[in-house]
Length: 113
Image (cartoon, rainbow, N blue to C red):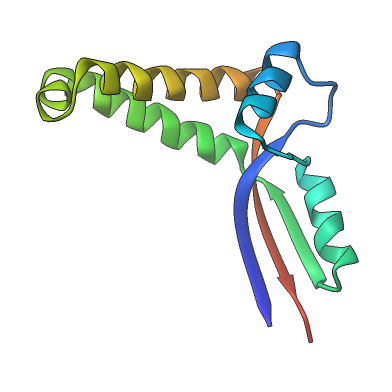
């Protein structure tokens, strides 16, 4: 069998207080990409690939943010000002956490023979 997972991760460095509060508020238990790969190996998966795909994640966030900001009025007309502020603020916060090295995005692949 195979497993393919993409998931939020944390950086290897000590986490900022702001990031720790965010993780606690969400009830997350985050691992670094290398730790995540280790968990898959410990679970019996072979040929585990654990990739830090944070750069791709931030590129997608930046594109979505730019598209949403460019269509602000249409977005608000279809939803609300609060929804717009929530989504834009959320993406901006993720970009900051990634730039700080606190938040990562991982892609994982493993096989069981």
